[in-house]
Length: 475
Image (cartoon, rainbow, N blue to C red; front, side, top):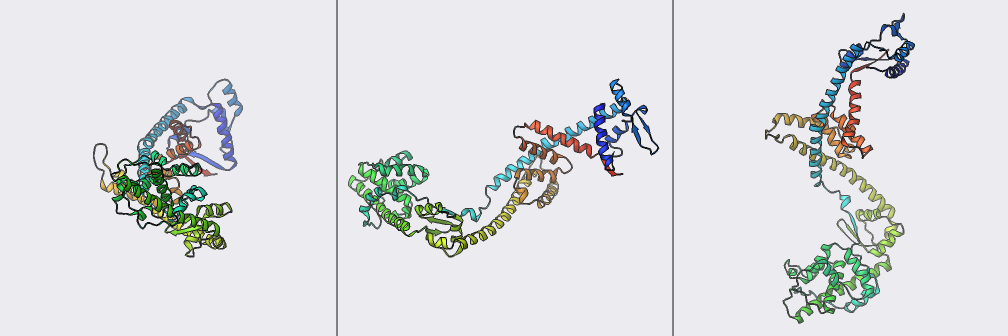
């Protein structure tokens, strides 16, 4: 039953529509039309004027309200309203069931399958570029390690034998075998070594000190591979074993041969380190920033690189330099050409970004199509396969909807999947409205439970359903 409060609110709203010459009326024959027909005001509460409009006697309404009398013919209105409410409730229940039990699971399946497939997405050329200063072992810049290795500056062994057959060690033991016993070195060396990936430590040990070292055909230089990291690790391990008279478990050769092999590995690694130290000294003195450019990797001299960054250097300048075809290697030369390199990089990055965006979107479309087809073409719970023609028609609708979507839609893949499923397969239902509203409310308030978000979505749906039963005309 309509209350007096509801009547006054409706009248206030009607006044606003009237001021704009707007007429609202229910669609003929709709459930709302039957309710409105049953809401005729009692004759004593209103009177028609000469223009045919109705003047409502608010004084009589107030009197009736105070006397708890009805303003409308109750029986007709109450029955019509009960039918309308029951119809609305049944409509809501039916549509919520579709959204929750049919649409939402399919959206989740599409999202999960597509996300899994996207793990194999092509990698951008921009993301492949990197500046490498990984060989920055602090100990090689101090004087103390230099004193140890300088005695091997003129040492040379064309190819030290890799004949040591030690057993494998845990990473903790490898770290222990790196200790030089000189605190000024170990204070830098051990924390640095501990920060390296475990695989790096294991590779350095296994490649030179275990029975595995002869199995892949590579000799000393093939294994050291110009890596300062390995030079430091191999030198320190060999020195520790020699200085502490440690014979590794698994060694089968005689002690003399074992120590000779250790000495050769240690000495050659020390010799290579002296060369690298001289390069670093020269780089610092001459301002050499870039060590080398190989493919997508720019190797830098760490001390010079860090100083350059501290003074305002921009890594994009290095990327532009590497991409320009006119590489420079010193701080001065790179700084002189910084504007040109930056412009080169910006132009290249813009082109690659545009190409990558198109490539990612095309790849995403392909994965969405493959994922959705695998969902709707799968057998049901009873093992019955769907009609191939129905699957094909549904996929045609899916592709048509997908063509309307852009990279902006792809920024929220979950919402994109929701739109695709709803518009392609459940376009005749309000599932998109209900689920989208639930998603919006949950994002606004993450503390909402699914039931609470569903209740808010239902309010919107009911309002939309009722408004669909109303015609809007200008007077």
